[in-house]
Image (cartoon, rainbow, N blue to C red):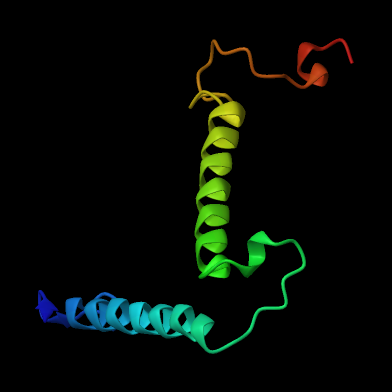
Length: 100
């Protein structure tokens, strides 16, 4: 478990990653199965369905990821947006012209 004599960070070790996946999946399963034992006090009707908070959370998370990707495409700028070349169209300081 070392790369060039150095130990990997504990979150990068394959054994730890697998344990976290198994533990997280177990917690999710227990929480969804708890729906059988807990009576939901529904306010809208759909929130009384089995596993509502699990599938609603998943769909909401997926919607946020897609919205963030769309926002990234919309806000994307060229790599040279802030200048870098001598012939670019970056805003200049008017005092450099000698007129200000």
